[in-house]
Length: 75
Image 1 (cartoon, helix red, strand yellow):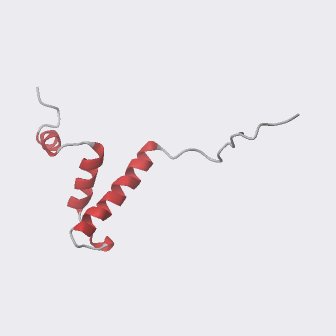
Image 2: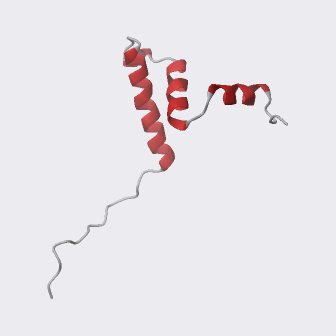
């Protein structure tokens, strides 16, 4: 019995969780933002992380401010 040369191999293990992938991307972008500001990897600021998170998740600053001011939501 012949097998075709176009067989697919099953990957071992599971694919990474989407949240883990996003977290990795946020961390990488945070380091890029700090480097662009002339800071090294040990000088990352919270604002760098928050900016990277907003950029990659689409969260806007006004949305976040409203959530802080009105935890129950705005009617």
